[in-house]
Image 1 (cartoon, rainbow, N blue to C red):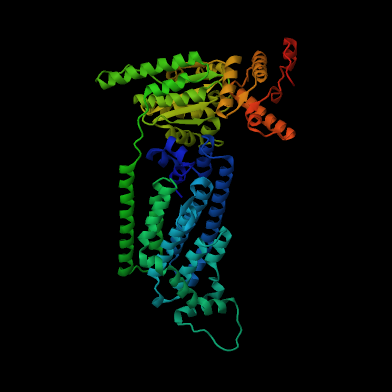
Image 2 (cartoon, rainbow, N blue to C red):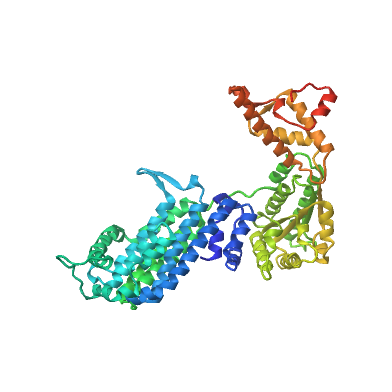
Amino acid sequence: MPGGLLASIMGDPQSRRTQSLDNAALVSFNKLPMPDIVSHFQNSGIISNEQVSELLAADNQYVTSFKELCRRIPEVAQVTGCDKKSVEQLARALFSAKLMAEYLEILTPPQLSYEKTARGTVDLLESLFDSFREIAGGAWSVFFPRTEFSLITDASAQFWMACLYSSRTEEMVNGFVGLFLTAHRDRLQTLNRGYVQQSGMHLRDAITEYLDNSKEKISKLHDAVADSVKEGLDRSFAEMVRVINKLELPPLLIFYYQFLTHEVCQAFANMDGDLSSKENRFIQYLLRQISVICEDYDATSASQSRAVAEEKLEQVLQELDELVGIATVKDKVKETANFARIQQLRIAQGLRPIPTSYHSVYTGNPGTGKTTVARLMGRIYKSLGVLKKGHLIECDRSALVGEYVGQTAPRTNAVVDSALDGILFIDEAYSLVKEHEDYGQEAIETLLKRMEDDRDRLIVIVAGYPEEMDRFIHSNPGLQSRFNRFIEFPDYTPQELCRIFALMCRKNGLTLTPASKEKVLHHFAYLHKERGENFGNARLARNCFEAVINAQASRLAASGTFDARALTVLEAQDLKTPAQDSLEEYGVEIAA
């Protein structure tokens, strides 16, 4: 399965829209192994750790089982008389379709995977795979009509049934191979000589059962797929397109199923080593009908694409002003925005823009709003036309640096590709520089080259602690020359931390009693006074909020009081604080 296809379905619809990948970025993923692709989206926060484990496990199961099947296909082909290359081609297409179904089960949000219809609730993922089954089964019935029964007819039916109706990969392999072993070859060949079921008393074994039931099985299979063939297999494909659109999956998936359909038809047509004119005519007709569906979908998508209003600079700046504190940061951001606006006006009037760089260094402790401001900067640059997308790709050392020789440059390039036309935000960038270690340096050199090669499509923001970032920038002349915009993010004051805490309460429909307000203020004042270099700032406020609501839940559960007021009021006793002693010295009587 192409890496670009896997990358295109990562995340949920919202993340795919906000951090969309262009063709160049998708192509770059084709060069990466599956673990690196998954790791990239994990580091970007697009997929969860649980999804990562499930994706890697599914990939490992299918790849391992497919390799085992490929090892056994030569024997299967020799016993059945099927063309070996066609058997391999069919197996690859069917395993790919089944693996894609597994990926979609892991990645699709539950709220999107069902549809209410007049017939009841429909599982869209199951419907998508059922439509592909209809296409595979229908194609088989056309290439192997009832009147042309043979061992190849029977074997090809078993191939696609085993792959598309088995629940586990080992069942797929065992069902595919079945009894097609060299030891049974002579007895199986009787299907090609008009085998007649024996009557009377005789020894029956697995081969006899297989031979006796073969014709009836094939007849029932033809009956099962007859309606799909009669209605037209292109209708099944059109239903796949509808479901893919309903699930808000990328159009690339439609063209992948188009490719798999072509592979299945080609494999069935050449299974006996010969492609008849009739078979070729059917393939050309079906693929043409499917191609028209794809073209119509492409045109419809383009004409009906949501007209998203371009965000105005003033809107983003207003959102910036609404952030708590960081006044000096806001001034710097507005200064940069004003400069970028003038630059764009120069260009619009045919004047030469002043040579400059928008690459920036954000310094400050954790939780001071660096990532939030970086996202706003992306939207500012997009609103001004500096960047086409303005999306933000977050990463750290682990996303850029490989564990072995030759891994770092491809990883770094893949991350940069995903950030093109937006902002690449590298947190704790100083960790790229380590003594007696060259891989981080290789990432820096690769990054510097891409910053030069893609200077009109990429803005890089590096972030971290002030002293460490200063050493980082001065560790390489290339970094010094490219990063000339510095914004320092100060720690929040106790009053600002209180405001952040209060906003969290307000957003969640909670209120504070006068005593709890005073206790919260003393709590943050104490922590601010005692803060060290790892002071958490807004993260500290978040942790405090979560601790308080958990304490409130325990208090209410113990008291048994669940009226509206009790559920929405936070009491002073809900906050456990190291500032309790200072509160008592201050003379405030607050329940501990």
